[in-house]
Length: 324
Ligand code: NAD
Ligand code: UDP
Image (cartoon, rainbow, N blue to C red; front, top):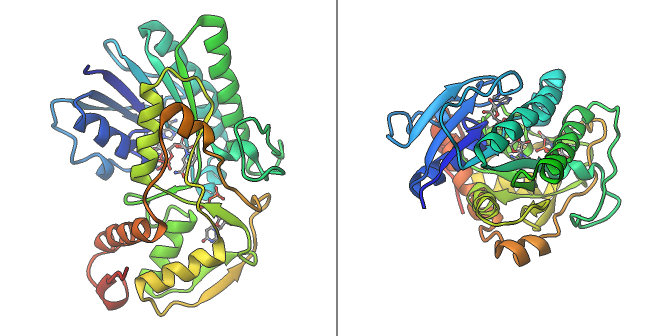
């Protein structure tokens, strides 16, 4: 059945891929974005499509969507640490007020509300891998708290709305995701390393690089979000890839894959940088029948191709060639 879905943050990295997949399956999409960390270019190919419309708005202040909706996917929020550290108050506002406005519109329309939460709700986890039952280890006043606590509040508000008002909600906890449309200057580890390797610059490993992350390719991640959107499941449910690597291993893999002459340099570890992170995806497998399938080397190669194409000819070693 065709649905009308609002994607808040739809011009961002994940949001734009979600818009693509919704339009491709026949849904009508209203993309709402203030372009603070996203790009018009991410959805330019959808503009003019009869099933796609674009609304420019800061969803912390207003949600000017006309007509009824079947679902609202709330992905609006800075997500890269440098982005949210540069916008601390806006990050708290979109997690709190933005979530409240989204929930109220969902209630009015009788729509399902999907909250894009994050593995950051686990903070620097004392339990490994992280199941949804783990309550987390977050510094409530550190620099990262503007993001972590905004998302924890957003989860609390979403579940309270569900309990008190009966709003149909789903909460996904997204783990580190990468792929085409990450901005080269986004500041996250995959885009930084690939952009640096393609330019032949040193890869900046923060700390000694022994901290771990588990990286999920965007196509897989969006499959998980859609499965949650369509399922009668409240969650929270972890959506991520349990394939765990140290940051140093990732740097070496990127250098090999791009055939870059780049070296590795070490830079200070950001405050409260989680030491390790890996999703337990038992619930996603059981409740949604979902699991990721794209190997890291394949996803990295596709992401490198996309970044190289954006950087243009001569933007990287051997004209941006990618091996693997
Ligand atoms: P992104 O920065 O590329 O996209 C976020 C989008 O939201 C951008 O287009 C931005 O302009 C928009 N936005 C921000 N504040 C807004 C506001 N007040 N009003 C309207 N639009 C606003 O980041 P992303 O990686 O695509 O992340 C999307 C969502 O997924 C975020 O909520 C993020 O917290 C969550 N998430 C992402 C990851 C990941 O690895 N990519 C991991 C965990 C959680
Ligand atoms: N990181 C790094 N070099 C970079 C960017 C990030 O070593 O140029 C590290 C960062 O310190 C963290 C990991 O890579 O340990 C993932 O960082 P990212 O910002 O992508 O996401 P996070 O999981 O911290 O939100």
